[in-house]
Length: 374
Ligand code: G3P
Ligand code: CA
Image (cartoon, rainbow, N blue to C red; front, side, top):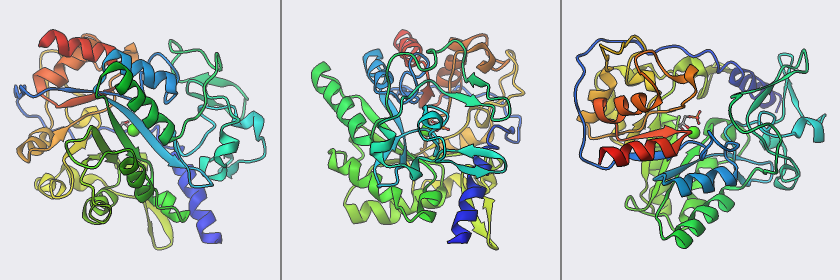
């Protein structure tokens, strides 16, 4: 039990280091015009999160109304095994949990985190949810993630369950005569397993319960853990008699997105093999597509006159894998130097490179661009 607690603490501390992003190995290749005639999809990243607090039902309804093809859910589990829609395993970035439950944190290297897995759904439902922010625990100052977005703790938002969100989307599909899909990410399955929870099985059962069973259904299942994605394909889906589209998300190893126990310690899972020749032949055995970080597809060294497309793009395309990069945001600090503006960035990925879809906080802009392009 002590080991588990220690591992948990290391895990949470590693999550805190996630801001140290590093670039993929750039390899200069000639740009290719791989524009496809297939429909490009717009995935509303945490809903229309550029306009309303991420993962609020309001943000999901707005994304639906804006014409997104799919709406994203990041899923973690509560203490009482309920699937809730939250980007992080902790609640303190988007709720007032620190004020309501001041002592219910885990202390990790001098920082305090309030983990969803330590709270029941009933407790979580007492919290107010807001736009993302960070608290400097030394100064007590809070800083919003994006100054131009929805103001902190205005109006009234709650953490929702996966079931509530699916019912919202299916309800709007009914009332608007649409077929907007769900795009569900299983968060940190290795951590949930350490806590004795099989989040992947629970998520698949929930998705099946709401009628999503085949590849033709409007659902994608995404995960940053290659071993778990393979387990979902090889074991869980056959057991549950479902066959859904799977997307393997790709992180930088240094983000510590996926961890493994080695010699009694938690170490980051290395994603390096995914950038080697032959990797996509392995991935296609169990996934239908990949979700890479943008610089894994277009090098940060690109300029407006010289777009450098990374080898991963051609290798994934050659295997027939769908490519859905993340995350497209319109704030000026989020526009790489090789793009003139947000629309240009979307155009580069969707039409000059030729990816199959984009995760974006601003689904309306991507939907309009795709409409304009016909
Ligand atoms: O799931 C893909 C996209 O959402 C990027 O990951 O960290 O925002 O969940 P994240
Ligand atoms: Ca996600």
